[in-house]
Length: 118
Length: 113
Image 1 (spheres, one colour):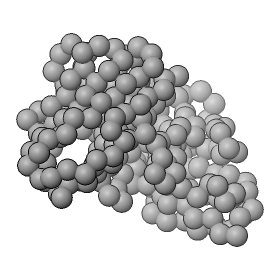
Image 2 (cartoon, chains in turn cyan, purple; image 1 turned 45 degrees about the vertical axis):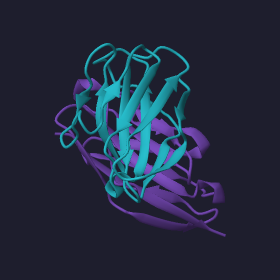
Image 3 (cartoon, chains in turn green, orange; image 1 turned 180 degrees about the vertical axis):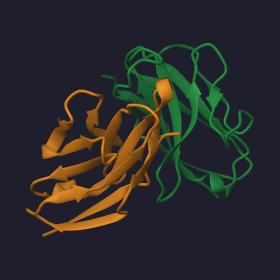
Image 4 (cartoon, one colour; image 1 turned 60 degrees about the horizontal axis):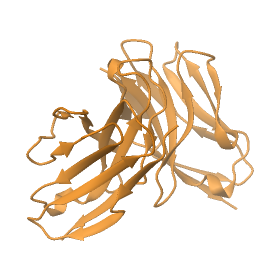
């Protein structure tokens, strides 16, 4: 299993600014992901955070808006850039301990970061 | 492409009565399926998972789900609801071999005394 923590747990930001969210896993994991959960909505995958290389973004999400870093096997950051009120969401980090491309097993989720943009 | 449809956005039951949360999936290959629960202001917790072993899967807190390939369904059930079961429930399918998760829209379960 994996225990995931996120910082900050919540924040209120002004439009036009940027916020970096940190995700820390208590053990080395193969894959890490970032999701967005807009108010009253389900979760949507933003990107796969790749260790030592550029993240892989899903359709509708771009690196300039959501730069992601993953310097090692236990840590990743997501930055929400040039924020607008539409970016108000919960951002969740998840980790998959298993083999990349292997049979899907449990993904573990962090508690989320609740972002409000004014 | 993989997708999942949760047939009910809201379900309301009385405490002590059975719970049924419906989920249908679409997948071009043998999928892995999950149910996650999200309590208010809390993170996601895995209830149970199906990964091609037994079709009847038992999870935590008395929940179980049955994988029915012929019906492309993976409904979540519990014999007797408890007040603490009130939460948002997500049916999830994997996408390809890359372990990406596709979430359903969610079902909000309300439990009344």
